[in-house]
Amino acid sequence: MNLQPRREKIAGQNEFLRNTQGIEVKTGGATLDSSAFTAGEYVKAGTAVFKDNASGLYKPWDTTVDTGTPATATGAGLTMNDVKIVEGQNPVVGVLAAGHPIESKCTYVNAAFKEATKGRIVFDI
Image 1 (cartoon, rainbow, N blue to C red):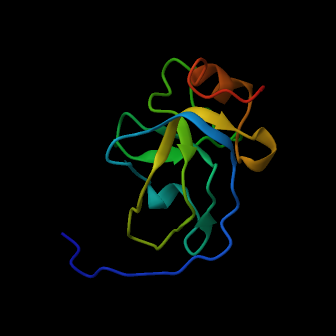
Image 2 (tube, one colour):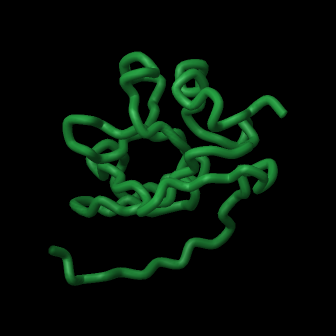
């Protein structure tokens, strides 16, 4: 158990939601796999992630990595806030489960991600 909390002020988070109608957020948040991100970088709000069934941690929906079929990419959603990746620490972040984001302000969103979140996350309003 890590009993060394840290606080970091992040200024200037960009809004990625079109509106707040029908918004649903994953209860309890999602624990990101820090080894799947670059240490020291900020994971921006609106980054597409999915749950890795082997580890239970969330990884980026990176188009360069085969995430399997949309049906096997469980827990797909968009991060709700910016979070800094610190080596050896897996941060918890809110995840948008349903809502209306602006696609151009999101990261790693592609056709497979849209299929995995079909009926929950709507980009074409």
